[in-house]
Image (cartoon, rainbow, N blue to C red; front, side, top):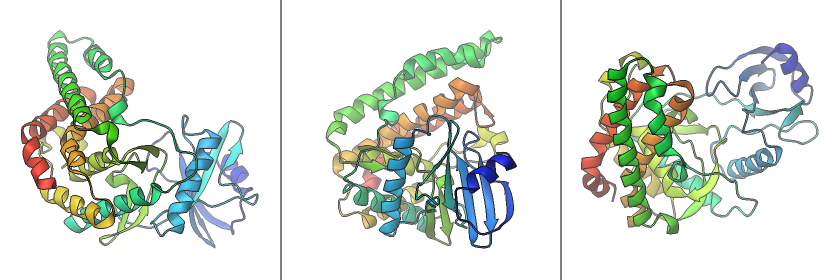
Length: 338
């Protein structure tokens, strides 16, 4: 984001003198951010990513986040402009200004996993009472074209190596079959009748900040939507219990989920909700984790050929191994989560 662009947008806000403005390189590069240090405190200026810049949806999202803040949820609050608007339009682009919250990343311990489940449950309970327009969108269970995307990946990832392409074809066929099995089981277990609320949609350690074992900020509400809460729970549990290492060493990443963190997050969710997860919802969780692993991995790989900085073929091999750990343990995982 250029300095002239930043200055022009800040002209719509009543901020004290800016002492420092620098790029804040966290989150998606599609939504560049600038950290502003002012005499009145610190702020984050964000340019909305393409696809997340519909004015009506953005205004609705801000109303939901403001309601959460009013009810004591740990939120990096949206700052209104001098006109009282919660975003600024500059040409075809939209901008948001948030209060900057200082915090630390997830350290992968039980109390923090418990806090993550607790705050997710509070959010789900609170937003069941939302009486405004419901945010549209669909999550990974409703993803379309999964099999087609997987069929195309071997050629995309290994165009000049027939041997590697055959191996990747086998992996993609395996992932397609696992996704279809998981999808069918989720539907069989009553997905259509599951408790619905407004969910975060992207609950992972990068979107939660801690002070000690307490959550001080939930970030990035770009993916909120109205759908069964169990999708948020399953993906959140998966993200908070995966054991990852260096991107250069993905072949050594553990396949197993951290069961202690998993149980801690489950207990936290129960502690934060007035409506505990139903037995059918708990039975869906491992199957939904399998769905999430497939869908959330193939989406960026289909576009860029890699997942972050990790080559797509290596990442998909890890996903197959991870699902290979979950699939034979589904009954045990459900028992632990009950």
